[in-house]
Image 1 (tube, rainbow, N blue to C red):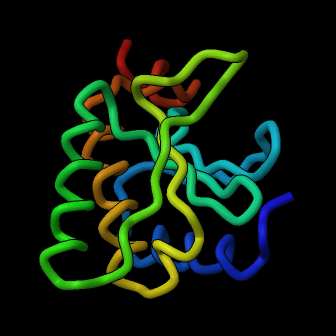
Image 2 (image 1 turned 30 degrees about the vertical axis):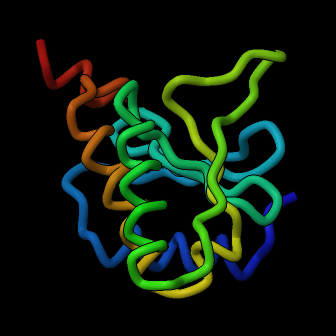
Length: 131
């Protein structure tokens, strides 16, 4: 079950972005997800932030770890999501400790938004509007 504090912080960050289109909160396996235009954008699973970073997500992970090291901060704890016994190429879990403050949380959410912005709308309204 997601931790309420992290979930509240993710909600607040998404609201502050004023994204075009609808952001919907929905239960997902093991937590709570946020869909933007029908696509899962991010979520909270237990005490971790779930982010969609796309197939190039590994580069974001390496960059985040290098940035943390250059500022002598605690290493970023992030791992690929395991689904059905297989390691995901596009979904990552960031430890709650790594997004304890506003800036790192916003950075990971911004990265997920950038990926989701490239996806076609999966919402019924988006599909109807495309006709």
